[in-house]
Length: 218
Image 1 (cartoon, rainbow, N blue to C red):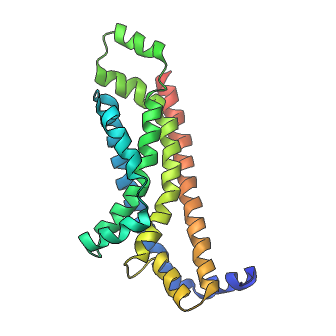
Image 2: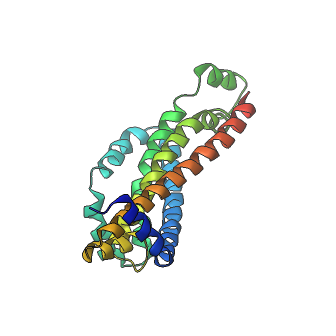
Image 3: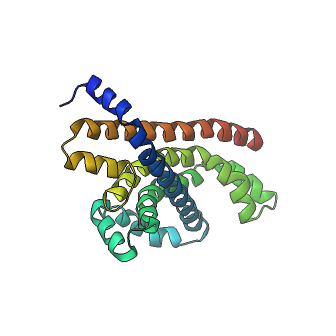
């Protein structure tokens, strides 16, 4: 087991070789996170607005999370090759579920008296959603985004394990196969820092957006 000083020294010495791997993982993480978030929000909106869809498809969403991603990932590589597409699919599968569940829960948290008031004022279903339900669901949606932001980094690393030329997952695999335990720990700490960084960005965006939306609702 390498000590903290040895890990820190190895991280400094490997800085030049680490930078391309970190940048590759960050780019892949951001792309997969946005795709997964978009899919999660779209699925939540469809299940919420179309009657009967939630009862029919919500169990399927739960079942989709029971398939181990480490088992599904090799199949995606076989079906779609070693390009970017299977990697984005892996990250999206990890990210979309927390966003979907959080958004659906948020849509149900809208005060009933506000919905009844809007209906008495002649608001349409679309106006109810965009002016009342959507703003009130933002805190729940951001809770899902925080979870997805941390999951997306791990999803990117898993996808890089299975076939990539650059990335933290590749760096970790090479370090592990050459018994460079210090480099493995450097990779682990970088993954942790990236997860904390993306989580912090979502928290910052939440403070800006929810505050602005709450003023608009009032």
